[in-house]
Length: 338
Image (cartoon, rainbow, N blue to C red; front, side, top):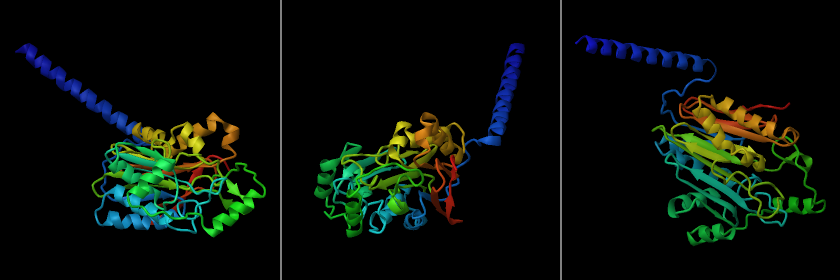
């Protein structure tokens, strides 16, 4: 009986010590990088760049009605895809060096299901083709002619994506045929025109489930066949329903080299706040090649499972849009270089 009492007493003391240790660890972690908080189940959608505000409005209608996050992000990014005045996504996107508009996109849901297309031509809504790859094939990615063939065989309309405005700019570029990466807003074309602004969007629905989408026409006047980070799961987009979701924009080659969006999510898993996780990813790019990092733009955007969000970029100028039940706002992200 005496041994049993000693065992019980020891067990109680051990449990108390463990609980106290956890409390102290949690308290210490909350000072700089709070531990994951309880999911609020308050729907939210965030997206890259100021034009993400209109995309968020469309996504919010899905979330407001109780829809899934993956449905919301697909609906949202279709807005810039169909806008001919947005020359960085979908219809009207700037072509490659050969005058061909090629699109990249990917999508991921709360169950780690994902789909992707790269170098897709003649179809406006690359994001919907990516979702069909996710849902109707055993594959994750289709590329080039195969992606286009798959889309057309499944009812997508064949269209000319090269608008007169984008075609004229391309012809002017051909006169010089000069391509030099410059800092701020990825790469800049003559006259300060934005080269490409990928739209990446992540959302959480009323059930606390996450989803993400990323779509772009890619780098203007790229070599034909070039693929950036946007359709690469783990680079341009990553969703982990236990932790959070992240997406990126900017020079895709730099993002791919560090598997950026996956890195951001894993940093949140370790306890970092979304903004701090994005900052660490940006710093890794800068540390890898400091001189190159000063010449280009890369930005990350993250949504934590708790509903907290944040962003960070290499250069000044990266903005992101947020919409939830309390606010609809465009933020300027913090940045590494002046």
